[in-house]
Length: 469
Picture 1 (cartoon, rainbow, N blue to C red):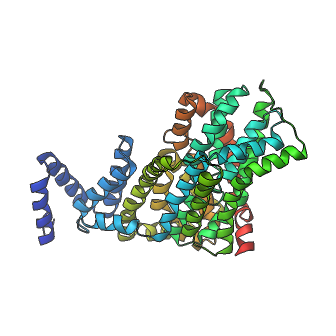
Picture 2: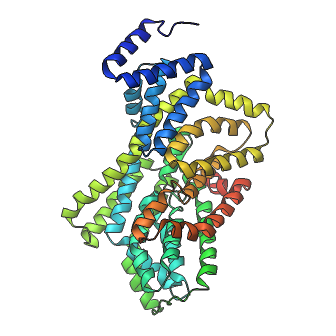
Picture 3: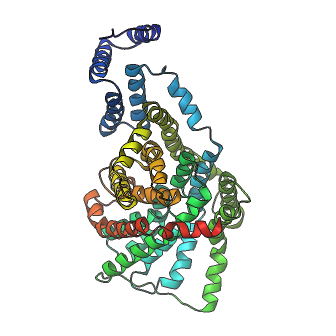
Protein backbone atom coordinates (compact mmCIF):
# COMPACT_ATOMS: atom_id res chain seq x y z
CA UNK A 1 0.00 0.00 0.00
CA UNK A 2 1.27 3.48 -0.85
CA UNK A 3 2.31 5.69 2.07
CA UNK A 4 -0.10 8.26 3.35
CA UNK A 5 2.25 11.11 2.42
CA UNK A 6 3.66 10.50 -1.03
CA UNK A 7 4.07 13.95 -2.62
CA UNK A 8 5.38 17.38 -1.70
CA UNK A 9 1.80 18.71 -1.94
CA UNK A 10 0.62 16.14 0.60
CA UNK A 11 3.51 17.03 2.90
CA UNK A 12 2.79 20.76 2.77
CA UNK A 13 -0.92 20.24 3.29
CA UNK A 14 -0.43 17.98 6.31
CA UNK A 15 2.11 20.38 7.82
CA UNK A 16 -0.45 23.16 7.42
CA UNK A 17 -3.04 21.01 9.17
CA UNK A 18 -0.67 20.29 12.05
CA UNK A 19 -0.09 23.98 12.57
CA UNK A 20 -3.71 25.11 12.34
CA UNK A 21 -6.04 22.32 13.47
CA UNK A 22 -6.49 20.61 16.80
CA UNK A 23 -5.13 17.07 17.51
CA UNK A 24 -8.69 15.73 17.52
CA UNK A 25 -9.33 17.12 14.05
CA UNK A 26 -6.00 15.74 12.79
CA UNK A 27 -6.92 12.29 14.07
CA UNK A 28 -10.33 12.44 12.39
CA UNK A 29 -8.75 13.58 9.13
CA UNK A 30 -6.18 10.76 9.35
CA UNK A 31 -8.96 8.18 9.81
CA UNK A 32 -10.86 9.58 6.82
CA UNK A 33 -7.70 9.35 4.72
CA UNK A 34 -7.20 5.71 5.74
CA UNK A 35 -10.83 4.87 4.91
CA UNK A 36 -10.38 6.60 1.57
CA UNK A 37 -7.29 4.55 0.72
CA UNK A 38 -8.71 1.21 1.86
CA UNK A 39 -12.17 1.61 0.31
CA UNK A 40 -10.66 2.58 -2.98
CA UNK A 41 -11.43 6.14 -3.57
CA UNK A 42 -14.21 7.29 -5.80
CA UNK A 43 -17.28 5.94 -4.04
CA UNK A 44 -15.87 6.85 -0.66
CA UNK A 45 -15.18 10.44 -1.72
CA UNK A 46 -18.68 10.99 -3.05
CA UNK A 47 -20.16 9.40 0.06
CA UNK A 48 -17.93 11.50 2.28
CA UNK A 49 -18.89 14.72 0.50
CA UNK A 50 -22.66 14.26 0.68
CA UNK A 51 -22.72 12.53 4.08
CA UNK A 52 -20.78 15.42 5.65
CA UNK A 53 -23.10 17.97 4.08
CA UNK A 54 -26.35 16.27 5.13
CA UNK A 55 -25.15 15.48 8.65
CA UNK A 56 -24.21 19.12 9.26
CA UNK A 57 -27.55 20.28 7.82
CA UNK A 58 -29.50 18.01 10.13
CA UNK A 59 -27.41 19.27 13.05
CA UNK A 60 -28.76 22.73 12.34
CA UNK A 61 -25.97 24.42 10.36
CA UNK A 62 -26.90 26.79 7.56
CA UNK A 63 -26.92 25.15 4.15
CA UNK A 64 -24.05 27.18 2.71
CA UNK A 65 -21.91 26.48 5.80
CA UNK A 66 -22.65 22.75 5.55
CA UNK A 67 -21.70 22.74 1.87
CA UNK A 68 -18.52 24.73 2.54
CA UNK A 69 -17.32 22.45 5.35
CA UNK A 70 -18.11 19.35 3.26
CA UNK A 71 -16.10 20.84 0.41
CA UNK A 72 -13.12 21.52 2.67
CA UNK A 73 -13.21 17.97 4.07
CA UNK A 74 -13.34 16.56 0.54
CA UNK A 75 -10.30 18.54 -0.57
CA UNK A 76 -8.30 17.76 2.56
CA UNK A 77 -8.94 14.03 2.28
CA UNK A 78 -8.62 13.61 -1.49
CA UNK A 79 -5.88 16.11 -2.24
CA UNK A 80 -7.41 16.73 -5.66
CA UNK A 81 -6.95 20.48 -5.36
CA UNK A 82 -5.79 23.11 -2.82
CA UNK A 83 -8.24 24.70 -0.41
CA UNK A 84 -7.93 27.95 -2.35
CA UNK A 85 -10.28 26.33 -4.85
CA UNK A 86 -13.18 27.09 -2.47
CA UNK A 87 -12.89 30.93 -2.34
CA UNK A 88 -12.08 31.04 -6.06
CA UNK A 89 -15.19 29.00 -6.85
CA UNK A 90 -17.29 31.17 -4.55
CA UNK A 91 -16.24 34.29 -6.43
CA UNK A 92 -16.84 32.67 -9.81
CA UNK A 93 -20.21 31.35 -8.62
CA UNK A 94 -21.67 34.82 -8.15
CA UNK A 95 -19.90 36.65 -10.97
CA UNK A 96 -22.67 36.03 -13.52
CA UNK A 97 -24.40 39.28 -14.49
CA UNK A 98 -27.80 37.59 -14.65
CA UNK A 99 -27.69 36.95 -10.90
CA UNK A 100 -28.29 40.67 -10.35
CA UNK A 101 -31.91 40.02 -11.33
CA UNK A 102 -32.53 38.14 -8.09
CA UNK A 103 -32.08 40.98 -5.53
CA UNK A 104 -34.01 43.35 -7.79
CA UNK A 105 -36.97 40.96 -8.09
CA UNK A 106 -36.96 40.55 -4.30
CA UNK A 107 -36.76 44.33 -3.85
CA UNK A 108 -39.65 44.85 -6.28
CA UNK A 109 -41.81 42.47 -4.26
CA UNK A 110 -40.91 44.20 -1.01
CA UNK A 111 -41.68 47.63 -2.46
CA UNK A 112 -44.95 46.39 -3.93
CA UNK A 113 -46.17 45.35 -0.49
CA UNK A 114 -44.95 48.47 1.33
CA UNK A 115 -46.44 50.75 -1.32
CA UNK A 116 -49.91 49.25 -0.85
CA UNK A 117 -50.06 47.72 -4.32
CA UNK A 118 -50.94 44.30 -2.87
CA UNK A 119 -53.93 45.78 -1.03
CA UNK A 120 -55.11 47.55 -4.20
CA UNK A 121 -54.91 44.29 -6.15
CA UNK A 122 -56.94 42.61 -3.38
CA UNK A 123 -59.68 45.23 -3.63
CA UNK A 124 -59.71 44.87 -7.42
CA UNK A 125 -60.02 41.07 -7.20
CA UNK A 126 -62.77 41.23 -4.58
CA UNK A 127 -64.91 43.34 -6.90
CA UNK A 128 -65.34 40.27 -9.12
CA UNK A 129 -65.40 37.36 -6.66
CA UNK A 130 -65.87 38.94 -3.23
CA UNK A 131 -69.63 38.36 -3.19
CA UNK A 132 -69.19 34.60 -3.59
CA UNK A 133 -68.91 32.46 -0.49
CA UNK A 134 -65.22 31.91 0.02
CA UNK A 135 -64.41 34.78 -2.30
CA UNK A 136 -61.51 35.90 -0.14
CA UNK A 137 -59.81 32.51 -0.48
CA UNK A 138 -60.15 32.75 -4.28
CA UNK A 139 -58.81 36.30 -4.11
CA UNK A 140 -55.79 34.93 -2.25
CA UNK A 141 -54.95 32.72 -5.23
CA UNK A 142 -55.53 35.52 -7.75
CA UNK A 143 -53.32 37.95 -5.82
CA UNK A 144 -50.52 35.39 -5.73
CA UNK A 145 -50.84 34.89 -9.48
CA UNK A 146 -50.57 38.64 -10.07
CA UNK A 147 -47.81 39.34 -7.54
CA UNK A 148 -45.96 36.32 -8.91
CA UNK A 149 -45.31 38.53 -11.91
CA UNK A 150 -43.12 40.80 -9.80
CA UNK A 151 -41.05 39.04 -7.13
CA UNK A 152 -40.65 35.43 -8.30
CA UNK A 153 -39.92 34.25 -4.74
CA UNK A 154 -42.30 31.99 -2.83
CA UNK A 155 -41.28 33.14 0.70
CA UNK A 156 -41.42 36.79 -0.39
CA UNK A 157 -44.89 36.38 -1.91
CA UNK A 158 -46.07 34.41 1.12
CA UNK A 159 -45.01 37.07 3.62
CA UNK A 160 -46.29 39.96 1.49
CA UNK A 161 -49.71 38.52 0.67
CA UNK A 162 -50.30 36.88 4.06
CA UNK A 163 -49.72 40.13 5.90
CA UNK A 164 -52.64 41.62 3.92
CA UNK A 165 -54.93 38.59 3.58
CA UNK A 166 -54.79 37.05 7.04
CA UNK A 167 -56.35 40.04 8.87
CA UNK A 168 -59.07 40.31 6.20
CA UNK A 169 -59.84 36.58 6.41
CA UNK A 170 -59.99 36.80 10.20
CA UNK A 171 -62.61 39.56 9.91
CA UNK A 172 -64.74 37.29 7.71
CA UNK A 173 -64.47 34.38 10.20
CA UNK A 174 -62.25 32.04 8.19
CA UNK A 175 -60.59 29.40 10.42
CA UNK A 176 -57.00 30.40 11.02
CA UNK A 177 -55.66 26.99 9.95
CA UNK A 178 -57.41 27.18 6.58
CA UNK A 179 -56.37 30.81 6.07
CA UNK A 180 -52.72 29.97 6.71
CA UNK A 181 -52.91 26.88 4.47
CA UNK A 182 -54.39 28.63 1.43
CA UNK A 183 -51.89 31.48 1.75
CA UNK A 184 -48.94 29.08 1.98
CA UNK A 185 -50.17 26.86 -0.87
CA UNK A 186 -50.90 29.81 -3.17
CA UNK A 187 -47.38 31.16 -2.62
CA UNK A 188 -45.96 28.16 -4.50
CA UNK A 189 -47.37 29.73 -7.70
CA UNK A 190 -44.91 32.63 -7.41
CA UNK A 191 -41.80 30.80 -8.69
CA UNK A 192 -43.76 29.05 -11.46
CA UNK A 193 -45.38 32.04 -13.19
CA UNK A 194 -42.77 34.46 -14.62
CA UNK A 195 -40.58 35.92 -13.36
CA UNK A 196 -39.12 33.18 -11.21
CA UNK A 197 -35.94 33.14 -9.17
CA UNK A 198 -35.62 29.32 -9.36
CA UNK A 199 -36.06 29.53 -13.14
CA UNK A 200 -33.19 32.04 -13.28
CA UNK A 201 -31.02 29.53 -11.42
CA UNK A 202 -32.18 26.75 -13.74
CA UNK A 203 -31.14 28.87 -16.72
CA UNK A 204 -27.70 29.61 -15.26
CA UNK A 205 -27.06 25.96 -14.41
CA UNK A 206 -28.15 24.52 -17.74
CA UNK A 207 -27.65 27.42 -20.19
CA UNK A 208 -31.30 27.12 -21.19
CA UNK A 209 -33.21 30.20 -22.34
CA UNK A 210 -34.58 32.00 -19.30
CA UNK A 211 -37.39 33.40 -21.45
CA UNK A 212 -38.50 29.90 -22.52
CA UNK A 213 -38.34 28.69 -18.92
CA UNK A 214 -40.38 31.68 -17.75
CA UNK A 215 -43.10 31.16 -20.35
CA UNK A 216 -43.08 27.42 -19.72
CA UNK A 217 -44.44 28.11 -16.25
CA UNK A 218 -47.47 30.16 -17.34
CA UNK A 219 -49.98 27.33 -18.00
CA UNK A 220 -48.77 25.16 -15.08
CA UNK A 221 -49.04 28.17 -12.75
CA UNK A 222 -52.60 28.88 -13.86
CA UNK A 223 -53.51 25.20 -13.46
CA UNK A 224 -52.06 25.25 -9.95
CA UNK A 225 -54.20 28.29 -9.14
CA UNK A 226 -57.31 26.59 -10.52
CA UNK A 227 -56.63 23.43 -8.51
CA UNK A 228 -56.24 25.42 -5.29
CA UNK A 229 -59.52 27.24 -5.97
CA UNK A 230 -61.33 23.93 -6.43
CA UNK A 231 -60.06 22.67 -3.06
CA UNK A 232 -61.03 26.01 -1.46
CA UNK A 233 -64.54 25.72 -2.90
CA UNK A 234 -65.18 22.34 -1.26
CA UNK A 235 -63.60 23.35 2.05
CA UNK A 236 -65.34 26.72 2.34
CA UNK A 237 -68.65 25.12 1.41
CA UNK A 238 -68.90 23.75 4.95
CA UNK A 239 -67.68 26.88 6.73
CA UNK A 240 -69.74 29.61 8.30
CA UNK A 241 -67.93 32.61 6.83
CA UNK A 242 -69.13 36.12 6.09
CA UNK A 243 -69.78 37.18 2.51
CA UNK A 244 -68.16 40.40 1.36
CA UNK A 245 -70.80 43.04 0.62
CA UNK A 246 -70.06 45.73 -1.93
CA UNK A 247 -71.63 47.61 -4.81
CA UNK A 248 -70.96 46.26 -8.28
CA UNK A 249 -71.84 49.09 -10.61
CA UNK A 250 -69.77 50.32 -13.54
CA UNK A 251 -69.01 53.46 -11.56
CA UNK A 252 -67.60 51.39 -8.68
CA UNK A 253 -65.52 49.36 -11.11
CA UNK A 254 -64.03 52.49 -12.66
CA UNK A 255 -63.13 53.84 -9.23
CA UNK A 256 -61.35 50.60 -8.36
CA UNK A 257 -59.63 50.43 -11.73
CA UNK A 258 -58.36 53.98 -11.34
CA UNK A 259 -56.99 53.10 -7.91
CA UNK A 260 -55.33 49.81 -8.93
CA UNK A 261 -54.35 49.98 -12.60
CA UNK A 262 -50.83 51.19 -11.81
CA UNK A 263 -50.35 48.15 -9.57
CA UNK A 264 -51.62 45.83 -12.29
CA UNK A 265 -49.15 47.27 -14.81
CA UNK A 266 -46.09 46.17 -12.82
CA UNK A 267 -46.25 42.44 -13.79
CA UNK A 268 -46.97 43.43 -17.41
CA UNK A 269 -43.67 45.34 -17.60
CA UNK A 270 -41.77 42.17 -16.73
CA UNK A 271 -43.80 39.96 -19.04
CA UNK A 272 -43.35 42.39 -21.94
CA UNK A 273 -39.61 42.60 -21.35
CA UNK A 274 -39.24 38.81 -21.31
CA UNK A 275 -41.34 38.21 -24.44
CA UNK A 276 -40.06 41.12 -26.52
CA UNK A 277 -36.39 40.52 -25.83
CA UNK A 278 -35.79 44.28 -25.71
CA UNK A 279 -34.00 43.93 -22.38
CA UNK A 280 -32.10 41.27 -20.47
CA UNK A 281 -33.72 39.64 -17.45
CA UNK A 282 -31.54 41.79 -15.16
CA UNK A 283 -32.57 44.98 -16.94
CA UNK A 284 -36.23 43.94 -16.73
CA UNK A 285 -35.88 43.40 -12.97
CA UNK A 286 -34.29 46.83 -12.54
CA UNK A 287 -37.01 48.52 -14.60
CA UNK A 288 -39.77 46.82 -12.61
CA UNK A 289 -38.14 47.84 -9.33
CA UNK A 290 -37.75 51.44 -10.47
CA UNK A 291 -41.38 51.53 -11.61
CA UNK A 292 -42.74 50.26 -8.27
CA UNK A 293 -40.45 52.61 -6.32
CA UNK A 294 -41.49 55.70 -8.33
CA UNK A 295 -45.20 54.86 -8.06
CA UNK A 296 -44.90 54.22 -4.33
CA UNK A 297 -43.06 57.47 -3.61
CA UNK A 298 -44.58 59.99 -6.02
CA UNK A 299 -48.04 58.65 -6.92
CA UNK A 300 -49.37 56.63 -3.98
CA UNK A 301 -47.03 58.45 -1.54
CA UNK A 302 -46.99 55.39 0.71
CA UNK A 303 -43.22 54.86 0.58
CA UNK A 304 -41.38 57.46 2.60
CA UNK A 305 -37.78 58.27 1.83
CA UNK A 306 -36.73 57.42 5.38
CA UNK A 307 -38.27 53.93 4.96
CA UNK A 308 -36.15 53.06 1.93
CA UNK A 309 -33.03 52.20 3.96
CA UNK A 310 -34.98 49.61 5.97
CA UNK A 311 -36.50 48.14 2.79
CA UNK A 312 -33.04 47.83 1.23
CA UNK A 313 -31.69 46.24 4.40
CA UNK A 314 -34.36 43.48 4.40
CA UNK A 315 -33.78 42.88 0.70
CA UNK A 316 -30.01 42.61 1.18
CA UNK A 317 -30.38 40.10 4.01
CA UNK A 318 -32.78 37.93 2.01
CA UNK A 319 -30.72 38.16 -1.18
CA UNK A 320 -27.45 37.45 0.64
CA UNK A 321 -28.77 34.14 1.97
CA UNK A 322 -29.54 33.06 -1.59
CA UNK A 323 -26.25 34.30 -3.02
CA UNK A 324 -24.26 32.54 -0.29
CA UNK A 325 -25.77 29.21 -1.31
CA UNK A 326 -25.16 29.86 -4.97
CA UNK A 327 -21.54 30.86 -4.40
CA UNK A 328 -20.55 27.75 -2.46
CA UNK A 329 -22.56 25.39 -4.66
CA UNK A 330 -20.22 26.11 -7.56
CA UNK A 331 -17.60 23.91 -5.93
CA UNK A 332 -20.04 20.98 -6.03
CA UNK A 333 -20.24 21.27 -9.80
CA UNK A 334 -16.46 20.97 -9.88
CA UNK A 335 -16.57 17.86 -7.68
CA UNK A 336 -19.22 16.25 -9.88
CA UNK A 337 -17.09 16.90 -12.96
CA UNK A 338 -13.84 15.65 -11.36
CA UNK A 339 -15.43 12.46 -10.06
CA UNK A 340 -17.27 11.89 -13.35
CA UNK A 341 -20.54 11.33 -11.49
CA UNK A 342 -22.69 12.68 -14.29
CA UNK A 343 -21.13 10.53 -17.01
CA UNK A 344 -21.19 7.40 -14.86
CA UNK A 345 -24.81 7.87 -13.87
CA UNK A 346 -25.74 8.66 -17.45
CA UNK A 347 -24.06 5.46 -18.70
CA UNK A 348 -25.73 3.40 -15.98
CA UNK A 349 -29.24 4.73 -16.61
CA UNK A 350 -28.97 4.44 -20.39
CA UNK A 351 -27.67 0.87 -19.99
CA UNK A 352 -30.89 -0.04 -18.18
CA UNK A 353 -32.91 1.02 -21.26
CA UNK A 354 -35.14 3.16 -19.06
CA UNK A 355 -38.10 4.73 -20.85
CA UNK A 356 -38.71 8.51 -20.77
CA UNK A 357 -41.97 8.15 -18.71
CA UNK A 358 -40.16 6.03 -16.12
CA UNK A 359 -37.26 8.48 -16.01
CA UNK A 360 -39.69 11.36 -15.42
CA UNK A 361 -41.27 9.37 -12.58
CA UNK A 362 -37.81 8.90 -11.06
CA UNK A 363 -37.10 12.64 -11.37
CA UNK A 364 -40.41 13.52 -9.71
CA UNK A 365 -39.85 11.16 -6.78
CA UNK A 366 -36.27 12.34 -6.35
CA UNK A 367 -37.04 16.06 -6.29
CA UNK A 368 -40.17 15.66 -4.18
CA UNK A 369 -37.97 13.89 -1.64
CA UNK A 370 -35.20 16.48 -1.94
CA UNK A 371 -37.77 19.25 -1.48
CA UNK A 372 -38.63 17.74 1.90
CA UNK A 373 -35.08 17.84 3.26
CA UNK A 374 -33.15 20.66 1.51
CA UNK A 375 -33.87 24.00 -0.12
CA UNK A 376 -34.62 24.26 -3.83
CA UNK A 377 -31.42 26.04 -4.87
CA UNK A 378 -28.84 23.50 -3.60
CA UNK A 379 -31.05 20.65 -4.83
CA UNK A 380 -30.98 22.10 -8.36
CA UNK A 381 -27.31 23.03 -8.30
CA UNK A 382 -26.22 19.55 -7.25
CA UNK A 383 -28.55 17.26 -9.20
CA UNK A 384 -29.76 19.12 -12.30
CA UNK A 385 -26.34 19.11 -14.04
CA UNK A 386 -26.30 15.33 -13.60
CA UNK A 387 -29.85 14.60 -14.76
CA UNK A 388 -30.33 17.12 -17.57
CA UNK A 389 -27.90 15.46 -20.06
CA UNK A 390 -29.60 12.11 -19.42
CA UNK A 391 -33.02 13.62 -20.13
CA UNK A 392 -31.78 15.15 -23.37
CA UNK A 393 -30.31 11.78 -24.39
CA UNK A 394 -33.73 10.21 -23.78
CA UNK A 395 -35.42 12.81 -25.98
CA UNK A 396 -37.09 14.78 -23.16
CA UNK A 397 -37.48 18.51 -23.79
CA UNK A 398 -35.10 20.30 -21.36
CA UNK A 399 -37.54 23.19 -20.88
CA UNK A 400 -40.23 20.68 -19.92
CA UNK A 401 -37.91 18.94 -17.46
CA UNK A 402 -36.72 22.25 -15.97
CA UNK A 403 -40.24 23.45 -15.19
CA UNK A 404 -41.21 20.02 -13.80
CA UNK A 405 -38.20 20.07 -11.44
CA UNK A 406 -38.97 23.58 -10.18
CA UNK A 407 -42.61 22.61 -9.58
CA UNK A 408 -41.52 19.59 -7.56
CA UNK A 409 -39.30 21.72 -5.38
CA UNK A 410 -42.03 24.32 -4.83
CA UNK A 411 -44.38 21.61 -3.58
CA UNK A 412 -41.53 20.58 -1.30
CA UNK A 413 -41.75 24.01 0.35
CA UNK A 414 -45.06 22.83 1.85
CA UNK A 415 -43.78 19.52 3.23
CA UNK A 416 -42.02 18.87 6.53
CA UNK A 417 -39.42 18.71 7.92
CA UNK A 418 -37.70 21.57 6.02
CA UNK A 419 -40.61 23.15 4.11
CA UNK A 420 -39.66 26.82 3.99
CA UNK A 421 -43.22 28.10 3.54
CA UNK A 422 -44.36 26.17 6.61
CA UNK A 423 -42.03 28.15 8.85
CA UNK A 424 -42.85 31.47 7.20
CA UNK A 425 -46.60 30.95 7.49
CA UNK A 426 -46.61 29.57 11.04
CA UNK A 427 -44.74 32.69 12.14
CA UNK A 428 -46.99 35.15 10.29
CA UNK A 429 -50.30 33.43 11.09
CA UNK A 430 -49.27 32.34 14.60
CA UNK A 431 -50.71 28.88 13.91
CA UNK A 432 -49.25 25.60 15.26
CA UNK A 433 -46.99 23.74 12.84
CA UNK A 434 -49.00 20.50 13.03
CA UNK A 435 -52.30 22.32 12.39
CA UNK A 436 -50.92 24.00 9.26
CA UNK A 437 -49.42 20.74 7.99
CA UNK A 438 -52.75 18.91 8.36
CA UNK A 439 -54.70 21.69 6.64
CA UNK A 440 -52.26 21.66 3.73
CA UNK A 441 -52.77 17.98 2.82
CA UNK A 442 -55.66 18.48 0.31
CA UNK A 443 -53.85 21.43 -1.28
CA UNK A 444 -50.66 19.38 -1.68
CA UNK A 445 -52.67 16.57 -3.29
CA UNK A 446 -54.20 19.07 -5.75
CA UNK A 447 -50.79 20.45 -6.65
CA UNK A 448 -49.47 16.89 -7.10
CA UNK A 449 -52.27 16.18 -9.60
CA UNK A 450 -51.22 19.23 -11.62
CA UNK A 451 -47.62 18.03 -11.43
CA UNK A 452 -48.59 14.63 -12.87
CA UNK A 453 -50.53 16.28 -15.69
CA UNK A 454 -47.66 18.56 -16.69
CA UNK A 455 -45.15 15.71 -16.39
CA UNK A 456 -46.94 13.42 -18.84
CA UNK A 457 -48.52 16.10 -21.04
CA UNK A 458 -45.45 18.14 -22.12
CA UNK A 459 -47.44 20.68 -24.22
CA UNK A 460 -48.79 22.10 -20.96
CA UNK A 461 -45.25 23.42 -20.44
CA UNK A 462 -43.90 23.79 -23.98
CA UNK A 463 -46.91 25.23 -25.83
CA UNK A 464 -46.39 28.93 -25.04
CA UNK A 465 -42.57 28.91 -25.35
CA UNK A 466 -42.84 27.21 -28.74
CA UNK A 467 -45.39 29.77 -29.91
CA UNK A 468 -43.39 32.80 -28.79
CA UNK A 469 -39.81 31.73 -29.56
